Length: 638
Image 1 (cartoon, one colour):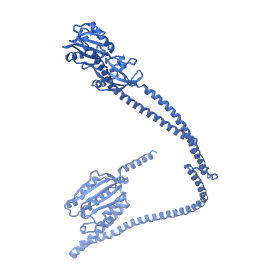
Image 2: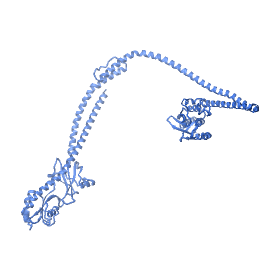
Image 3: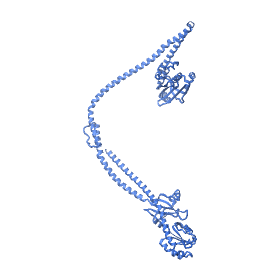
Image 4: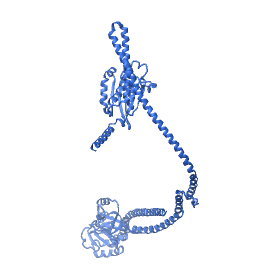
């Protein structure tokens, strides 16, 4: 019983542990998928907020710029240009808005003054908003690239009463400090690539992101350039990140900036560790519960079963000295009650055993005596049957011989009378002698048929491989006169098998059936005969059918007897002795088969017969011949 306790504890423990581990794994997997899906949705939403944040910065710069460009001081110093006065005028606005991009142009778009940059002075501004401001007097803002640096720039025209004097532009550089102000959401960072082949610009203190081509494949880049957002997980320096890539257009047509919002997925690892810790605690709890359940099962189930086993072993040795000491109201109590009942029943049955044994011994003696008597009777009956069959065969041969000799003498005397007394007998006497000769011939023919029927049963010929298609062609040739006389069409099915049997007997079967079909075809305008076959698991089945006069239903079983023929108005002129079908039936039964007929008056008849495959299959006889040859060669070697 120890092993049963161990098995129960092991099964409970393993099943509980497996369920716990499976639950934790599935929960962890579901949690990770849900968190990743939620993270992607948040990042996708933030990727739409970033351009809006840039719009807010541009709008604020444009508001500040309106105040700057509409001041009378700046108009007064543009024509003629006074750099010192313009610089002093813009200084207050620069401090208030904290721009790091300031540019002043004349009415032709030539840079008159720029903040901290004297190289571009005297050149035409590359800011696309300048041309629009001078041409239409419109204000605007957007992302502008200046020497591989990105700025959020706002531009407005400087207008006096008559015409546009020039333009003024202010902006803020998109740098790590600016990106830190744009970031929004828990642990979410924003990156922008001012050069796709270099690292991204990220907020201060953040790990740099490599070039876009390193993070995205060619297909993903094409999708990103077409305006689609790309969601991707990457691993950098041993840490996983979730990124959503998108693009923002610059002021210059056809130029795009690659951007991304991303966050670290390290919190998933921390959550996984926390779940593992929880799993360990739950495992300990499950172990304690399983241990308690195992102890309870041991006390309530295993120990009673052990006592029941001991009681069953005592019953096996026919020891009825102790009863089963269990009286619970559960299935084990029912089992204990059944074992007690079995013990009582065994005691009662043991008392009757000797009586039944003596009665059974007496019955066995009587049964053996009866079996011996029946066996002896069967042996005598078999011997009598064999003796009667032998006497019947001798009787047939004797009758045939005793009848044949006088009949042949009568035929000889009739011929002698006809030769010697032809003149004196006259026509009536010769007619009577002719009738005597014909009757003698008929009787001799019947005797010969009886002898042939007896030979079929008693004298088996040598079996050979019979080619049925060739045999049927020979039968048609032999019966060609009758076939042509009736103008009958004979159709033989293709593929008839080769069989192992007595060739003359099989020929006799087919020839008798075909000859009968021709005789009883009647006056059909288109007489037809069919010879066919089919293959079955235990036998081959053959048939010979016609569209002749048919057979009355009450005579279908009688026609296979000796001297039995179809009796009807249509068959009165048909010659026959009534032995052919009896011979066919005898031959078919010799080869383990049976014969029957299906017929309809006026529609024809079909005779079916079977031959046992075990007796006529050539393959079986080849195997037997091979075994006999092997035995002969072994004997010769010895």
